[in-house]
Image (cartoon, rainbow, N blue to C red):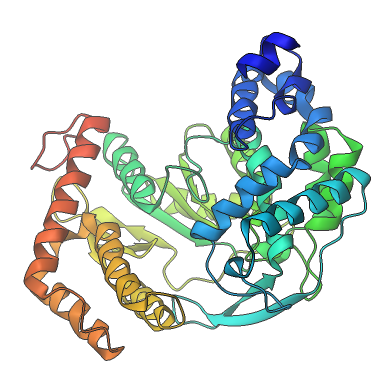
Length: 435
């Protein structure tokens, strides 16, 4: 014990050692991640072995302070129903709040406070979606649970699940889809979208899944209190923990079942957006039926789509993740959809309600162009950049760089994206992928 306390290192395999050291508060999370790495080679047995220790790690002021810092930096400045923001608290007050929350969590007395429900327009422009705002302390608790559970549960997810995961995004999903499509000659795409996925997760069944993986009564009791919202059924949309729980539930009832029963047909899932890669329209139609066979009993329905099946080699175009995918030659081409433009407009409109609105607007336009990197080669670059500038000026953001500068930035992002894809899949830079 003395060696551990003096050197700040875990010298035994005892999971309790993770919370013994009282050095820098962020080190607790590092030790937790090291402990997770230690048990992962043992598979499900390893995950279950840590279950009795997870609540103590969540209910530690150091974990909650890391969660606070993370949210204050990246979580947005919007206040909760009590009107308090992160900037309203001094460092001493933050520590005091974290210690109170930790004590309540350990005693089993924590319960979420009131929440505020807002409806915001979807990026597609078709309807609205709910966004739940909680008080700061409730967001911190959810984030603390996420920080402890994420590495454990994420290890279960397959390589074809890319939404709501660290270091994975739409560009990774598109690159994987292109690689599998061209290598396996699967040029018929089935696109599907789960309707209101968060609201249709049955929490009792979700907790049954968690219990099978992390059997600990105190952890399950905490999740049973934290996960439900007051206004809507299912998972609270807008909470830090909800995306991880949605991924877990869909992994259990969709991804894992699909891989088990149809290992020869790739299915890529980005959050609630699904892509089945097929060789014929008949195979794609059957794949949609099989998807519903898994999803409907789990509580989900697929949105009706005007064109769910696209035969790319026959001149069809698939709309997936804001990209219009076609096949003009050997490889695939990506275009910018109306949905993507709508998303940019929404982000610029919301930027006025944020701190440092001008700087945020510049960052929004740059990030939007980065996400459209696959479209650079196939787009009228001057026209796209002019439209971005025009849209920014519409919302009084004259500080956005001129179209020529945006074009150079977009080209650099496209070059980096192409190089990264070539390194991963083995294609030559500056040329279509080899298939």
